[in-house]
Image (cartoon, rainbow, N blue to C red; front, side, top):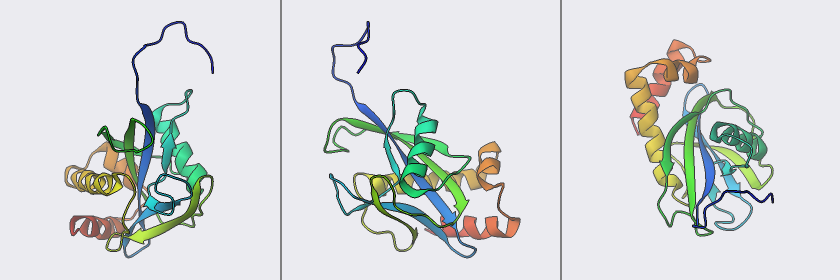
Length: 176
């Protein structure tokens, strides 16, 4: 690793991104999860995500991790919260920048450090690793808020959907 001329002597956290990808299959809203292939939480379900590389922005890292772990590419992810509880990751002090997106469901596969990737109904989400249940709760709240307020972010998230599909999605997200 390159030695930097200026650096802090104080400990500092690592940074990850996590992607809450909501998918619409024509009738229901689902969420994309990966099964972790390594510790911690080996065999548990989590959101696609991982550690930022030193030469990328958080947005770039979120999209890269999504592609590496599931094969899914999305042109738009919306940053909605930074999770920073000191004990959220048993490996070390890790902050995660959380994103969400809304896409049509498509074929996904577990790649890189994901054993599997699958779409789950919002009514049947398995127990999640880390603090991902809280991340999912907040992502749903943010998507609800976007639907209520409209605006440019919602337009970016929903440009590939018909008005009828958007009504179904809004109803499904709000009823949970």
